[in-house]
Image (cartoon, rainbow, N blue to C red):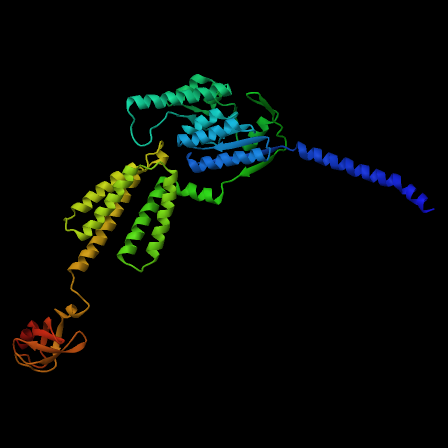
Length: 446
């Protein structure tokens, strides 16, 4: 009887199990068909920190098996070594790469143009431009031979990228040799860009169903209802990207030097030393990212030495003037970046130098005032003080005077009456002060 009951329920249970299996398979298929787009944003100069960020974002896209990696760019360019690190990641990526110059008003100049030519897809927003990719020397002018070699290397690299991506070579080379820059419409007409779209959503709509080829690999983009994951900078990268700005690094260095100088000149203040030490550490981190000229750094150090020596040596201001000149020249040479955004401009350096000069002059005046002023502490501090005789005394006799808030034994070379105003002229052994009648006595008598 019991076996019969079980057999009646078996078809019903089998139906439920089958329905559950079908639902699971359908859900798995739907999940497997869902596409993923990883987006990163580069709105800064190209240096080691931003390069690290882009390379890591692309690696994350590969790890997540994304269907597309989009790098939204607005950059004036940057360092050649950082640019090449990004391009190498583009070329070796297992995920198709789209470089989108946006939003409206953005640019992909200099190194950014090289990166665009290395991407599988180039899209631009209206009102954007790219190009101006002529190589610029870091650290000064190059001689003719070296300048020709640098230019030839940049041309060959650009030719290699455009050939690999099937883009027109001639206009891309003109961006290197002649510094040409192209608007979004011009880049699209010449074949340097593939799309002109107004916004990221429009970009995904335009790329949906597109076929992407790279060497012997082919991707078919299915971006309908794609999930978009934004890859942001880490906290460390954000901090380093901020302090890697030349002006920020420069100010941190000055704060660090000033803080340590005040700590050494007034031991025990603590706060200036701590702030100065932290600022110097942050400045050193920034200098590891920026292209620093050691000649400029040496001139700034020499200027600081001149300012300190001005306090100790009587140079009638010559050391301060020499320090100011060395400071300005060293500051202008400190960060010889390849683009204006990675250099210290004269419009920033000169006011800063004048501010430092003003601070040095102010501190120097305080030191000179202290050195030339009367001693206020110890026995020497009594000399010149005005007191009043509490007892009359003749020359060679000991009397008493009230001076500096205390009663002292006193001697004088002339007679002193009780109540007379006296001036301390020296200090003898045995805690006896030498005094003389003050001119106020004569005026009172008159």
